[in-house]
Amino acid sequence: MTLLELEDVHTYYGEAHILQGVSLRVGEGEVVTLIGRNGAGKTTTLRSIMGIARPRRGRVRFLDEDITHLETHAIARRGIAYVPEERRVLPNLSVLENLKLGMLGGRVDGGGRRLEEVLDHFPKLRERIAHKGRFLSGGEQQMLAIARGMVAAPALMLVDEPTEGLAPLLVQTLTEVLAEINRRGTTVLLVEQTLEVALALSHRLYVMDQGRIQFEGSPEALGKDPSIQQRFLGV
Ligand SMILES: Nc1ncnc2c1ncn2[C@@H]1O[C@H](COP(=O)(O)OP(=O)(O)OP(=O)(O)O)[C@@H](O)[C@H]1O
Ligand SMILES: [Mg+2]
Picture 1 (tube, rainbow, N blue to C red):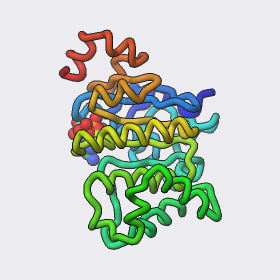
Picture 2 (cartoon, rainbow, N blue to C red; picture 1 turned 135 degrees about the horizontal axis):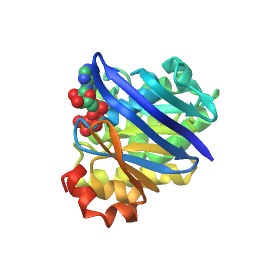
Picture 3 (tube, rainbow, N blue to C red; picture 1 turned 180 degrees about the vertical axis):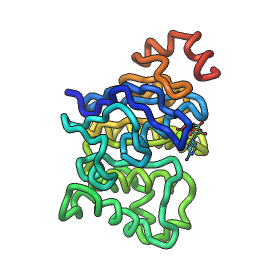
Picture 4 (cartoon, rainbow, N blue to C red; picture 1 turned 45 degrees about the vertical axis):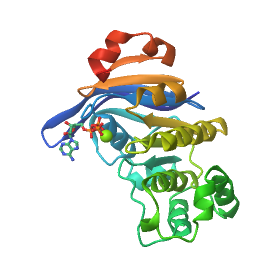
């Protein structure tokens, strides 16, 4: 079943035509990855889904509803959680308080059990539950940003470059966490620049360049296509 579908989405910043007809779909249960060079339009695609950047043309459908013109909070309430590139952990709130904020926009009430389930994925956060955000390491902040998205029990998580700037060991931990989250039923649309991580996690990938989708296929197909890797990923 298709959960999310973008159809010929065009998004501008002022007069700059950034997304030039992006079409993609994410099926229920999938991890789908958007990969591409800096400035390709990956973040703008996620912002267009959330209604933070407004598509000027085209359509975004979620669960068979046209959400193109909904307010961002209404889109979140439909069951989409957005974990932006800049993690936005609140430095003066504790881990627990940051997580409770994540429940506000979501679909669950009495989220105590949900909170416990989410913390099962993140033992480090459980240990540091009373610490203020500003005392967390970069990796812990990234974990918290993801956990905060998850407590809302989203049907779909949009996760923008979660491994950026993390040490190799943390990249691996995070990859495993995302895989486990997906195995337990959350669909993920991921933006990822590290090809190995993208290939390891994804059911399908879209390669983006200059505001357009240039390739769509399985990890096997992309792994076997050096010309796409060279042209659009600089591998
Ligand atoms: N707020 C903005 N105003 C004007 N132009 C912007 C804005 N945000 C991004 N852009 C431009 O839009 C294009 C796409 O940016 P976007 O952030 O979507 O790329 P990206 O693929 O996420 O790149 P990165 O890998 O560096 O995060 C770039 O040319 C960028 O300079
Ligand atoms: Mg980006």
